[in-house]
Image 1 (cartoon, rainbow, N blue to C red):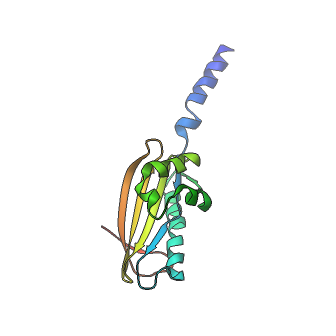
Image 2: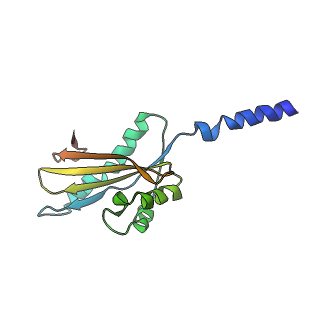
Image 3: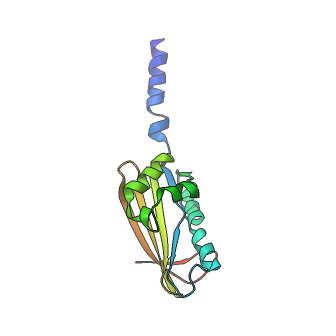
Length: 151
């Protein structure tokens, strides 16, 4: 009987928590549109497409579990535009509430009809700290994606 208990203990020690896929939540991207025609339907659609595109890309990278956070929960956690992007501790609490290990917070800032900026932060939920900052310049108006150039 002791050997069965030992085998079960070893199995549990090396299974679920240790081998569990990292859980990543991607928030809806905010749009900050400072152009002369702000918040055009095409730009709202383009910005809304960024979350699912990023989730698809993460899924193709390997063994990650995508965690969903509702728009209502995201809105309740923020105190205004850019708040979750600037306050990693608050963003991390939202991620923890949803069971995520990592949280992606993004903002699409459009200052011109020729280009815009995508700011993406990767937040470590456990440490409540910024793990990565990924600013990118977007060019073009392709409705099925974006043309990216690293900055």
